[in-house]
Image (tube, rainbow over all chains, first blue to last red; front, side):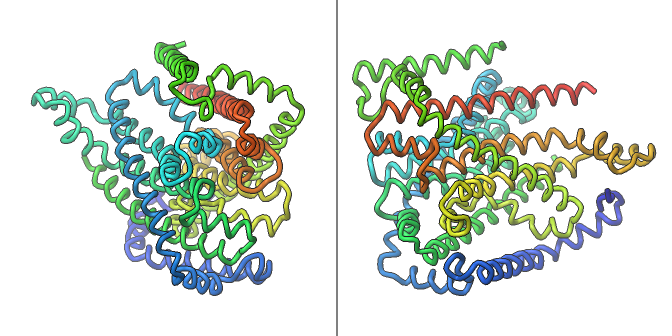
Length: 267
Length: 250
């Protein structure tokens, strides 16, 4: 077992310094590594099983140049953004409400964790029966996937706020709304952003799954059509697009997340 | 049971009663949602048929294989990354944004790789679960208090002793969190896969019942599945509680 570099302060300081100009290099290394792996896999398994990076990007450009693509992309974007807004707002409201009362939080937490763990895809027939085919089913699917982590993170963040803050709020005779927006939300912000990050990813997942089953339009539909016709190249191209978009959004949120956590630390 | 527990139970019972009433009195059409009592009848009926039991067993086996593989590989990857901080830094963004990627889009690739059998499903469940295990193992290992390691060094523990008496117990709570996620994720992955393209398993049975308008069967299967996953989850939760209590008590 090697002693980790944190052991002595000099090494830790050096590590922090290296980190300052390191991330870019690290990211490049990661990307190059993944591309090399992908290319090697493609050569090993054959082009039909796993198309090469170059072929995938070329196909993606062709798909994006197609005249049908903007309509599909717009459909997915609209469903996803609507679902995200609903999931974040309602998750935040429910989380704040549950977190502000000890008992309600205790009652709700196991239920929420249980809901998080069940395979929500099995609810898709129920959602379809309730919402019908079309964009509302997709949105509902995105929301049920994304809302729970937002609630759980927000709830725990509110519970962990130091009670001094609440006492101060009471001393200043702040109204409920004032307390919520000037004390609770800022104090809980770092965790709320962490919840948003998880909620973002799951809402995307939910929306896409919804689209795969309940739609005739959108990127999820293109994906499932390509799966059915065994069009590996199209599947890879669309998967690549989704991976790039999701990773980019997630990285941006992660950077925000870390900055807020770091800022929250000294207090 | 605690007060919160009773309230929770009352809440669930109340919600079910409300749904039952709404369905019975026709506020919700029977074509979309059936009353919970009928769902339970459906579940019982499903449980008595050999076919459904076979589907359940098949799904459980697939989840089990995916779970075992992901636990082993996740723990190994976590330990490896802990030993290699440089590699860990490079892979950090990948681990952090891994769950933003809809893994199931690679399902067709796995079909080409493994053929049309249960292995593509195992692969999806595995991919879903393995990173959660790796992240939590890594977390657990890097949070072992340094004093423990120093004490172990002072006592001249051999590496196996150190692993058994210091590292494993200290990292256990985090690893257990990983196990909890792995169970949930491998279920989600496998059942999602069964929905998309598969000819067997609970996921497929639910999709089939839906397509043939067999609401009683469909809701019955959904109830069975939720009870199963919820039950496993509850057991893991109470184990975890006990683990924490024991560790805190020392």
